[in-house]
Image (tube, rainbow, N blue to C red; front, top):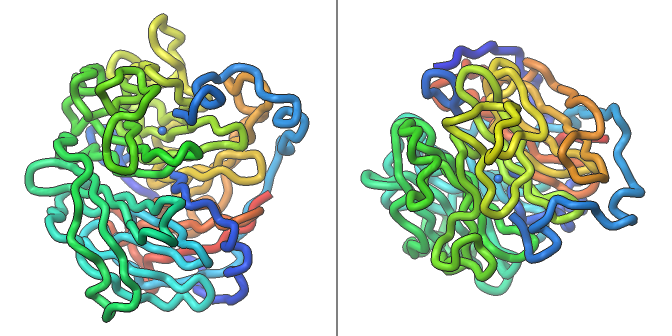
Length: 398
């Protein structure tokens, strides 16, 4: 397992005034384990099936080579093993506890926590448990909350009805399983889910430590999956009867779309290179045959790579023309400015922020405009928690 370097955590200062910014927040989650097996992302129709030249309007507004990021407030604290995070219409958030198997609603203004309930069937162990959360664009009408979690026999994706008018702790309906039999392991369970611009549901999975599963197209492990909200294969997937969208992945925990509706994914490496990949339908991203940029025929190289000690990437989000990537072992927030060309190289070198200031960083979600929600991960058994951990921070970026 990777080691960790732990930094100080700033004092919380819950502030108001973020609901307006969240009114336009994306419901897409941006989006851990590396060496030795420890915790160290397409498209939407024709526009996202190609990584070719963007439209003139997309390439005319490029981000600056150098950016900025600063924590402006702490929304809430005292969270236990937080993992998945998703925004609701109106500005509140839902956060999942990996180890406790619970979902809380966080008031986007005051930070008040309300327990929705426990998700039945969650079996936390190792890197498994209650992982990703997502809500569809139809949430205001149907009230569905989607979750990815580990059971005693598999990883699966379910949806649950949510009724906020019921008593706290009893607000979730029974899980409706839409996809089961995603292989599980003590490590590399993936777990990130997100609704894309095409309104389809995407999931990042891990290869459970059984590296050969990543190259096996018949297995759901070591893949990015694309499915309807009911869990069925989508018309336009590489194989008509399969939810497999891309393969050759080690452990995908970050999913995000840019302004051109291109899908990006963050992935844990083993001993050498963590990766940020631009996802192509049917693409083979190489694991376990290659790791990082090796230029081998038949495999797609990452757009950016990091030493495993500097990243161990989990969630990612898109804002201000850049991908923002949360680092666990690296304990920092990475900015990768995107170019307006084919996207095969970033506009400039990745830049890190908040280095070792808040400990391990698990999830990052767009909060509208130039703001992000950032979730720390110091109470998951791999961090070194300080009083108040874990937290949701509001970060201003540029």
